[in-house]
Picture 1 (cartoon, rainbow, N blue to C red):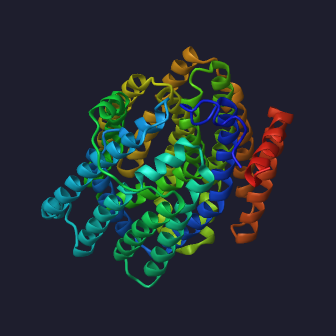
Picture 2: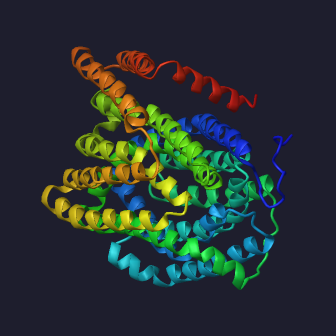
Length: 495
């Protein structure tokens, strides 16, 4: 049954009260119902690291980055423009976006197949790596077919349904990947898993949110959407150049082994973001867009969303760094990943800052200040391309990770920019969770040095460290912390 007041205005999909309710429920649903999924993914990745070599993992990262970089050119920001659009989109808007995107996607897919011999020579790809390149290219096309149904669900803030295809995709992908890696398929494990994920994902999203694909190019609709879409996609282009483009360059400096070590450290440092931050930003982008004229509500929502992210991301990163030496000792097959420890520390600094900064730039984008985020992305891209190749040549993997930490530290300028726009509290939103995390980290560090490395002591440290963090956070934040937990639980169970 829909919330009361949803259709008071036929030109508005949801009103402010409904937006607030659905935003809270959306965050709870995406965080709660995908938590088990992320646990499955983490376990699968943990098994994969035991079965696969750093060099093979580096090949997967390199090929994936190549496809991601090329696939940028198949989007001009129309999907994001549809989500951000204040008025309810018409069917012609959906069909226009679908038509333009598919024309671009098919063009890029054909280009990738045509230039694959060149990519093979430049990156010294094996036969198995070339097949992986083809599989990723096909999966890119399949992913494009899911765009419109996903946009419809996002605009309605219907994240309870949105998460189902993700669950199906990821369970399929991880199950096939780990099984084949265990059976010794190496790089080919990724190839089969990627193809299966792409096919299953398309079927699942159309069952959840039916939509009849259609081709129509409305000049009026396209012109309106491009006003937001082009600056947004230019911002994405810079992000692609900064991340995937730089991965290709750094991979050439470090080699596949070094890229595998760096990529592993990145993946570990980004797990808390994927667990918690992504779920919140997925909800708050359309929610902020719907309430962009309500300054007071926007400020409260920003503070609470950053607090929610920081409360979960900060202790996860601190705990991971503190326990990493014990983890690789407890699991002997993880010893090959020991060189990832120092990079992990630097990349955790970057991730902790990103957990706050991403939500701030998310806010700026959702309220139409796309030019500001574009300027910020220009700054981060320039710094990344200046520092990372230089530091990679100087100090290898550790230097590359240090470069990411330095670039991340420049994000404090975003704090200032948003502070001028909204009176959000840095200390209440991020400072208190940071203090509680540092307290927990000190405890884990000193006690970890006093006890032997075994599974029992590892579990003991995780449990007691978590309890200490929860107590410290409660003392700093107060009763409102429990109130938010109760609201999230009620939203999650739909009451």
